[in-house]
Image (cartoon, rainbow, N blue to C red; front, side):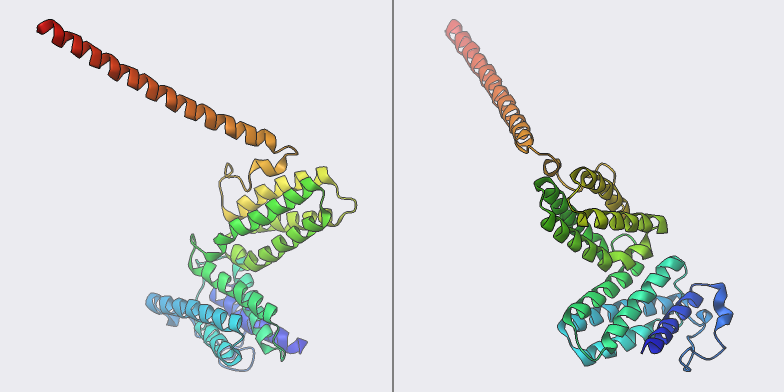
Length: 302
């Protein structure tokens, strides 16, 4: 079973690398695929229009596969996986992503394919692997509006829950929040690798390993966690291409006494209302004064 899995991995990964313009093109015998079947069509056979059609087919197959695997529809999922693999034939991904991105896409395809090949259906695994593949394909074809970017808010919420648990000294809630963050990251990681510089992804990988160790420490090192979460905020922004001034979570979660911030916000509201009231009062006085002047002028004339 392991040998078959490795052969399947090579069947998908090597053609993708070849189609991306890898110098390893000579590694596969002419006319033969790694499984003994037909080799992928040469890139030169596809025009720009045909390439575009193939990529649309790839996205359509990934979306349909996601729906079938979420619902546990076995036959439909297998058929859609075959369509997805067929859509890869002869397609060049050059200019769409890096070699690391192609590796990530191939991994997500093989992960979903191996999940389908298992005799037992595990709903969580079907749901996870199909979501990862869908996000990876979507990221490949939608540079700035990929679905994976919507996970920023989800992961920011996970990080805020970590911070809240740190403030309250709740180690179990901290570990639970970190587990959710880690799971969400694993879901979007291939999509992120396809779009982001490897150093940005590696930075978040390293932070995640460090935060995992701190979250499991007993007793909990509150000061170290506070600094780690601050670093995580920066790494998360970089991963999702967010600006530095955009907060991941509200400052109130990072202070022992939230009443300070509540009072400050309340003070600003009172000042704003007071200023508005003063302006209205001054405007009313001006209207009254003008009215009296007109009345006096009228009396003098008659």
